[in-house]
Length: 296
Image 1 (cartoon, one colour):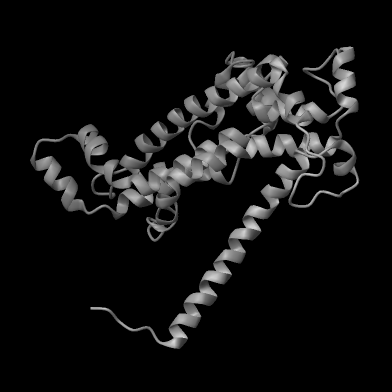
Image 2 (spheres, rainbow, N blue to C red):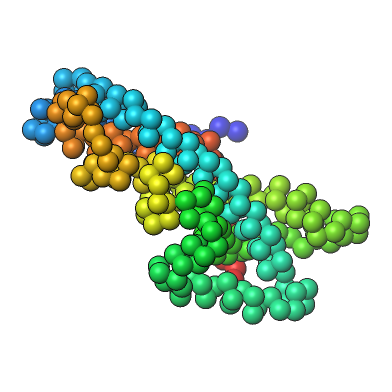
């Protein structure tokens, strides 16, 4: 049956579309401005003449970044970190959240374990003790120094725990009757129905690893092991660390660039991978943000 919409309903729908369109533009315009500045000439960018369209189109900033071996090396380190880090983080989140999602009758020491993990959200070991642990375990200058110190994100674990607690117990009971153990129940029952939560937590994890830069400076003694964000953050700052010596060609290239174009180029390139990934998980994202948020 087709219902005829009233004039007030149509006006509301129109106003809703216009409002949401404005919100969308507010999110897109900053990225358009970044891209335009990075594609503009040194003079136009420095003078503040660039708005939403490049002025004096130039690829000098991207050519300068792209021609450096250090850039592609750091890009590979970041890709390796995202893949390994996400796999480790998500595996530990699943393996920790599943038993803690059980009731006290099923898991006698559930509450003490929950508090054991939750207290780490409020009290940290400190920067120096953490560095000493990483150093004494021989992780310095290795990819694992970027992954293992934060291998289990307690906040993500709590989100997954609460989502698991929303799954009907009848599903687990049916699996148990069919002879499934805890491993089979987790991988074949819990995880397949938890895609919204997995997509949300996975996106948080990927973004966290991709955007992290300080731990690269802290745990990497060699600039060759810098992840992309660490490399880009040190690219402008007095050209130190990985750029101990500069050739004449590099100096000439820097004369044609400005700090503003290089900064916008690095910001845009740092955000681009996440902007590419996000549309593929968007359909799960909103549901995953809300499901499981009503239980302890």
